[in-house]
Length: 221
Image (tube, rainbow, N blue to C red; front, side, top):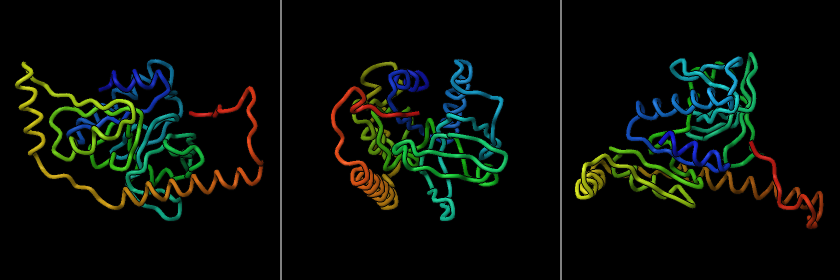
């Protein structure tokens, strides 16, 4: 799953990693962050601290775990850390570069965590180019996880034979029940409305875009 992240990351694509437990998600998150540090993608000289003293660096993918109306962040929303200051962290949405937020370092210590990988509850409403579902997920993981990727969806099982692999998948389908909530659907719809409003305002302000050398290009993180 860690290798899958870097395979897609190297192509400039997002991948959703769905783990069976929070412990597995933490292990994957720490491994990805450390490899990014080793490869020079992340700088450890400036850091903040998240839930459970988890290290947070500029460029990390993180998730807010509590609604905060004052800062405009919501539970389970995913962000990229754009900047770290003594009193606050600057965040930009992973799905909309126009959606930005600022949370205090106190909020980060209590309600911010790495989110390269997550359990199924953390990916409901998320969409990426690819998804990889780890072993030992429950029925919700198999229902939600393999529908997150637009280009590729993979489920991993640990088994000695193809027949045993099919049995593992069948057991996962019987383990637990999907917990689909309306909150994620509402959040996704609101985000889409905000993007549409910004696009309309930009079009009214600048007029139609005419093709040229830079047409169709954008800036991403």
